[in-house]
Amino acid sequence: MKIGITCYPTYGGSGAVATELGIALATRGHEVHFISYRQPFRLPSFLARVYFHEVQVGQQYPLFEYPPYDLALAVRMHEVVKAHGVEVLHCHYAIPHATSAWIAREMLRAEHADVAVVTTLHGTDITLVGQDPSFHAITKFSIEKSDRITAVSEFLREETFSAFGCAGCRVSVIPNFVDPAVYDRALYGQAERLPFVEGRKVLMHISNFRAVKRVRDIVRIFAAVAAEVPSVLVMVGDGPDRPAAEEEARALGVLDSVFFLGKIEAVAPLLANADLFLIPTASESFGLSALEAMAMGVPVIGTNTGGLPEVVTSGTTGLLYPVGDVAAMAAGALSILTDPGLHETMGAAGAADARSRFALDNIVSQYESLYRSAVKQPSDAH
Image 1 (tube, rainbow, N blue to C red):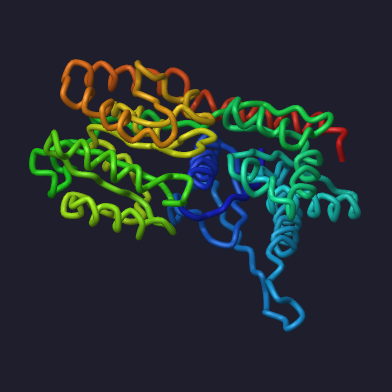
Image 2 (spheres, rainbow, N blue to C red):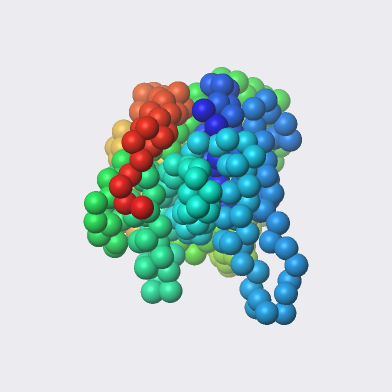
């Protein structure tokens, strides 16, 4: 099958999942065409059966205050479908990707051609952006005009129905995934160890450092832990709230033990260093970084909000607490770090659970079935 994938190429869960899915599909013999304004951050320079098509927004005309990326994307989708015989456009994030795919499909139908549109909802496209009054109607329209719709968690599925209604829509839950061949602690030995750890415990966080990630809470949890157990905090990623995290670390006197590594594509070797993963998020539709940590045998401290409880089983693979309860999260972190038996048990349970419920092959097979059904029996909601 020939599949077009459009995602945001920037650092974040939706782009990572879309890219890894495309790579996995290519290894199964499918032809995959990525369509975006930049090469996705987890896409290597060359892979067999994987192609990248850059969206050119064009000249900046005085008439346009803002470049019309959504229209340029629709034109590029139309071109790729026609030139390469793409059968499915898989859009990760509802707007503008699903909107552009609908426009491209209408252009194709005017030329007596067609393409199936599959839209995967990842989180803030529904919980934040889509519910903004400026975008609510177009988000609802784009979802309803998709042939198939998926959400990464039951929480997000229910949130979609609650926010948009989407009459006649059927939303399938297909969770995010990990590759057990990559997220395996046994693959990473002493050569991969971080040089600044020096025998201390390693607490880790990976994100795009937006406000919803509550990075100040991460630093506060770490400061409480570090007061009792020699440890370091490793912050992976970047974003608008990084200065806030640095400021909090400075104010609490722990800046020398907090290491900001910036954006790193291959996070598995880093997670092999971690003793505990922190994700005290205000809202998480899934929690891909938590799943990746679990797969590496790292217990998770997080919040019992959104889709995170569907990933982390509190008391078994980690501990979940109310949003903002820094004291409880710090106490939970200390309970795990100071009990080697509990740490080992939780780590092993997390790795087993990740491989049982979220292994790449199982999830990719679900997407393949979805594509086939979309091509054979497209939705009536056009």
